[in-house]
Structure formats: C-alpha cells, structure tokens
Length: 292
Image (cartoon, rainbow, N blue to C red; front, side, top):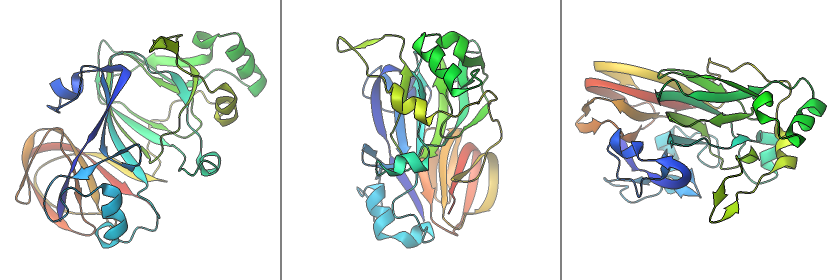
C-alpha cells in the first residue's frame, strides 16, 4: 500500500520561502522555516491525503493499523521527517538524550541532516572546542561562542549524523532534509540577542549544559542505524522490497510513478511493511526506515 502525507508547516523567525520555490509546497508565508512531512508528534501531525485512510492523522494510522508498520514495537510513532529552510542562523542549541527526555514524556532527539542546498558554501556549527565542562561553562558565561563552537563550510550533498547532546546550529543559506526521533525538545545556548515580538527568545542554559556532550569536536558523517535507517536513492525503473516496518520516502528530485501513483519532488509517502513496489521514472529520494 502507498500512502501520501499532507505536511505541516512552521513559520519561524529564521525561515524563508525555499520550501515553495524549490519544492513547490504551499507554504503559509515567506518566513516558513520547517515542513514536517512525516510526523505523528502532537505539535504538528501529518495527515493522510487520500484513500481509505484519507484525513487520518499519522498517529491514528499507526495506533489503529499497526500491521501496516510491521507491528513495530514502539507505542508511539518514533520518528519525524522535516525539510528545513534557514534564511537566518538558527540558535546554537542542543537536544537531550533518551534518558533526559524520558522525564518529560518524550523520546530523545538524535537526528541526521542531508544538505540539499548551501548558498555560497555557508557555515555549519557542529560540536565545540571545550575540553572540560568547566571550560565549557566558562566560555558560555563569557559569551565566547565564536571561540567555543566548531564552525565549518558545507556543500550540497553533505551528510551529518547528530547524536543527542551534540552542540549545533544550522546556519543561514542552508536548505536540508532532517530525520530525527519524534521529539520537539530544544535547549538554546545562544540566540544572537534576537527579538521576537519585542522580546528576546528564552535560553535554557542550565538544561543545555547538563545535556551537552563534552568533549565533542568532530562532526560525524556516517549514519548510525540505532534509531532509523537513512539512504539517498536514485532509481529509474526497479522493483523494490519495503523494509519489515515499511519505507518512508521523500522525493527530492524528479517525477514519475510508484506503482500506479504519480509522485513528484516534495512528496512525502509511506510504503507499507514488506510490500513490493515499482519505481518508474528518474527519481531521487530519501528512503527512511524504522529501527526497533
């Protein structure tokens, strides 16, 4: 079974309009930073576009028809798939691991990024230069973020794996695909003293300092399959066997058919567990699979 999802959009202080100009998505404004394309998170749920489950939320589909997902053992749908358009820098931030997030009733937030566009080889921040927690705290207290963070250039096609606890910031000029655990917990270290509705956005220094990994300087460019599988695939005409828990696809280039269903750039879809499906057309897509 092939199921298409209607995404949820998030307007942000740092967002832009590339989700429309690049993917043809119907964004709510020119400050749209995120498209939650495959999400059962209560802060933004995808819904099924059509068919026998048309209008259903992903959480309802997962809870009521677990056989479509190969009876995956997680009680709630465990991942979230996004497109992110950063026209300004995001805050320097960190996410908690499973143990810390459990107290808040959430998964932790390990994620990965696939860079779709990087204007003028824009910067990225992943990791930091502090050798101890004491040194880290001292640099934060001194507001010495440029000395603290590990900043480097990125290019379209780059991949990064971001375990929970990694200090990071997506920087202006970046368009990327993000796959993460289903969590919406972010602890901000620094937000450039920006104002939103006339006020500085809140920081979360105590929680962030507890959550950050130290030391942590080297960006990871190989995927760890602990929470989800991730691959970029180019196909023209091939039969494909879906994973035991199903395949989640994001079309990033081209158009064509998956079985009898027409697909195009910007589509988010799910192929039910253990199905065999046929790709027809020059498609490039992300294939995401669940882990148990």
